[in-house]
Length: 176
Image (cartoon, rainbow, N blue to C red; front, side):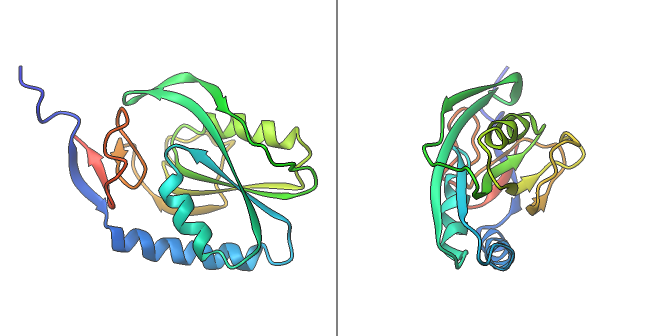
């Protein structure tokens, strides 16, 4: 059986232009909502790096950046557990936190992260995600800012990967 065509980008869901338009809209809303607050943005590595880089440049506020690395996937499947691989370094006590995530799929990673951040006495914790699988995601994790809602397809591009491939694509595709 030939597998050359399996696990390749199949159908474009969002073009680079459409993504950038939505990033600007989200950035304007975040700028409005966080006026006068002590904002710390936390990017969830590796998938959010392109979205994070683009959105923080259009948020017109002073802010601090930090990053966290969580692992919960192997191939196209969730492992069912979340593993912390790199923690944040910022002192977040009494500060407003905005988690910037590439995709909310099951929501397990964000449930883990929110508990961790709230345990550090953050003033508030909100979520900004580029993609949201509303039908699949835990009802305990509802993002505050959503780029696009998508069905339960495995997607790649614009930071999202399949076994570390396709992150560099500037558009988002459904994986075959």
